[in-house]
Length: 293
Ligand SMILES: [Zn+2]
Image (tube, rainbow, N blue to C red):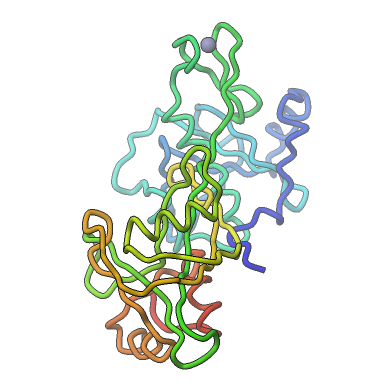
C-alpha cells in the first residue's frame, strides 16, 4: 500500500547477470533499451528520459537492469561524455520520470552512484572492476564488493487524540530550504540500532521530542546516493520542541486544519508527490493536499 517507486513492474533477471550468452543475445537485440549515464547523471531529451538501442549507446560500464514486458533494459555508465549542465542528477530528474520507468532509473542511478564512490577494494586497496553486469565489483585478488544500501528512517510524529480536530503532526525544516517548506523528520540508522530506536533517537536529537509507540508505514528506494527510506509513524510522549539548529531551523505542530489552510495559501509547502514523506503526511491527513516542492 505504501510502496513508492516499487520495482514490481520489471524482472531484475538476477539469474542472468553472469550468463554471458543470454546477455550477448539481449545486447544484440535492437529492441533492447539503454539509458546512458555520464557518471551518475542523465540527460533528458525534450523533457523525457531517452532510451536508445544498444547499437546507439556509447562505450562504458554496462549495467543490466532487467526485463520489462519481454524487453531487456540496460544502462551504460560512460566517462566519455562531458557531464555538462544538460546532464541532471536524480533529484532533478524525478519530475520527468514516468511511473513505469522510475524503478529502472533508480536502479541505474543507485548502481552508478555506488560504482563512482567505490573505486578500490576495502580489503586490499587494489582497483575494482564491475562484474555481474554492474551488480558486483571485484579486485585483482578476487575480493568481491557488493552494492550497499543505507537504511534511513523518515517519520511522521503525531500528538493528541487520533482522528480528532486537536490531533497534530510534527513537521520541520532545514536551514537551507526556501521559505515555507516543511517536511517530516528523517535520519540514518546507526550500527547496532533498531529502526524504531533510530526514529526515537533522531526525533529527540532534532527537536527534543520524546517518542513512544512507533509503527512501520512503508518504504521507498532513495539512491541519493544509497538510501532506503523506511517510513514510520510515531506517537509523541512530550510536546515541547527544542530544535537542534544545525539540522532543523524550525519545527512545528500542525493540526489537519492548519495543514490544509497552509497548503492552500502556499504558506506551507509540502514535499513532492513522489516522496514517501508526502505519503506519510497525506495518509495522516486523510486525503490529497494541494501544492508541493
Ligand atoms: Zn581486494
